[in-house]
Image (cartoon, rainbow, N blue to C red; front, side):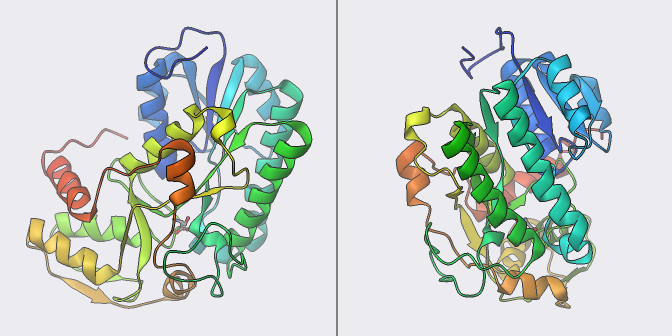
Length: 327
Ligand code: SER
């Protein structure tokens, strides 16, 4: 059995879909450190040179069932991190493509898991499952899920599909509702919460940042290190401890753009932020301010490491030391 503490010596390998994405890049890199580069198969429709250099990389459109099946067979896959998706802001511009990729892509993976008896699946849900009628503060695990966005609708449906495949076919699929993810090693794309990454990058480059989210619009956020830690922790937890088979609430930090700008100013001296809220502010305003994640803490020991200051300081130090990998 894979121990999770070193190089994987067992037969079965790990597949990551959407590996070139913001989370995919960092999660694949960490999984390769833990299990060995050859045992983690990175896939995407966009090639990433850094990932292609550190282990196997395959073109994969998760909507192509045959391609997915062939890759699972070719690489003897026993575990899948299924990350390929279109995020919230882009989703509002590409309604049908978002529904199709986010929902049919997941169904294709769940069906392969059932047929091929894949040991375990990770699939990310999001704070976007919540809509305006969920409590804004400390949003609980179980509350009305009436999202405003196609992305949110696809995540609510996806959560139900995960619970269904677990109940009906015994597929061991595990999920967390990620807040906005903030990292510096990979490019975000199409998300509402991406503004935070853009603000940090612009500040470090000393330019003026025009923020598309209103200065007081608070959102739950998380440093990428914690997001990677959560994915691996839930996947390595004892199956008997996973009591929620839709998706776990997950929390770390919450802030509004002006609060992030203030912390960035402390570390970089940067103070040039203008606010020009666009349609992303309306999406953000429909999501919670903060999340109650006590179930994740109780069931599989979730505990984030970074607050907002530690996150900004870490990113600032890393970027100014030019510790950014070639892409
Ligand atoms: N970060 C995502 C987005 O902004 C939410 O899960 O779309």
